[in-house]
Length: 215
Ligand code: G3P
Image 1 (cartoon, rainbow, N blue to C red):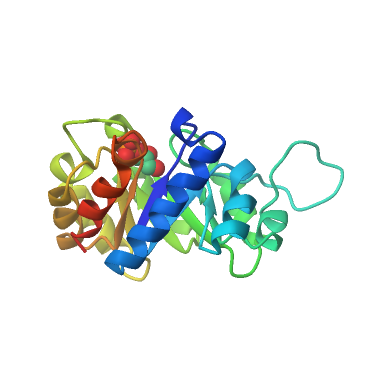
Image 2 (image 1 turned 90 degrees about the vertical axis):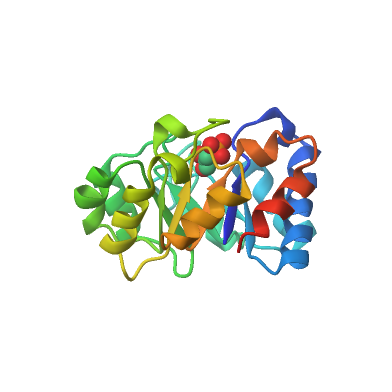
């Protein structure tokens, strides 16, 4: 499984998001690997309706419905047929208590991808939280062009996989080669989260195909 996080990169503004989501869909069909775009809430519905593919948003808030202004409700998002969301990405932190509350009141079938950035978090607050998927991303390696979670933190990947034997683990941060993915999968990860290497690529389709060929 590959989650491509579009973040707020300019390349994904306006029709850029739709184009990159189309590439995710095309490469997924070609490679047979599940590839899900993780997009801004502003783009999610449009991508879902046009491409009829799985789409996640980058974050939601701890609200359901009612007199709340400017928040993103997981329930509203799920009703619009969006498939899931990241929670607590390093660039969008949420307090552990809030995450717990949020996941207790959660729409059925709406996938939760809980992001953690260290083994300390895996052993601490995160172990009491029930998410569908855990994503390990060491913050300091996010956006790196020459180091990655796979080259710098292989032992932590392994420890997190062992810590959560029943939950699929994704890893991310600095992934920029097929080798990074091969190593991560060998260590027990079920997939990756990737952003800048694909979003900023001259030829995102070519790079994504190369990354997908590791599975
Ligand atoms: O969510 C994925 C992301 O944080 C990793 O970013 O640019 O290092 O692939 P990047």
